[in-house]
Length: 312
Ligand code: ADE
Image 1 (cartoon, protein in one colour):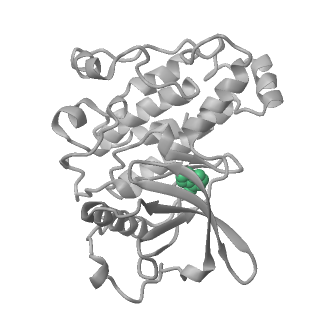
Image 2 (tube, rainbow, N blue to C red; image 1 turned 90 degrees about the vertical axis):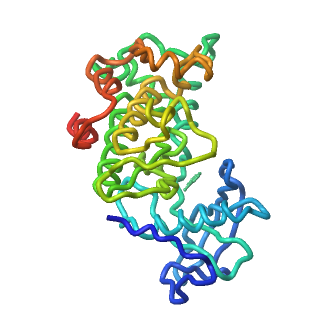
């Protein structure tokens, strides 16, 4: 299993193979902002070339708790061996700068949620429709050839690309779950798209608890992404690979709907009661029966769910 021991900066190993020399790092514009801090674009200067990177940093004057969590994120990223569908760690700066910096690979097409929404906008523009349904096509299964032509013309993902996104995420999650790492915030906003449409799962270093046999872990405080969470995560703060599977189902729904917000028309405060009563999202009009079956799978005893879609 993964070693997630936290060490405070003062006692961190000095011969850190991941430490980047700060004079080699150029920090550029903001790519995204979260509750924790900011992600900026940048590059690392090497002898032969400049490598584009993304740099994650805390806000100024972070709390002790935020710092601790950030070091923990860095440690988890160091301890997970690279995988083609996880954002790769390039290095970090934990000593030369006032605040720590986490440097990861740059994914030029940004996060999957924005990517899907921009595809939606291109597909429906000019349009008076709200962002609830994609046009009445079988987007996720029997490819309509006119739709394919439209996608090529508008430079947006074709149905087969969407299936490929889902499959790549499943591969990355299968790998994470094999390492007993629980993501806890799997959602389109935490998935990145690269130039060649390769998909990379991001922010898996935020999985704060890694247990040997995949039992649950509890946490306190913090904002929770309730529309992506399994019922037991909301009610009992229980996070497992199975609850990641639930979030994966929601993520499939995001892909099929080209970036809609889950449970459209349902107020956040009503959601828990609805879910407890057995309510689940209906099949989007463009969603194939096969895909809807996968969206509805909420958990799987052996964590084998991810591989099911790998063979789709
Ligand atoms: N936004 C957040 N992380 C990013 C990354 N690694 N590449 C591109 N955009 C990002």
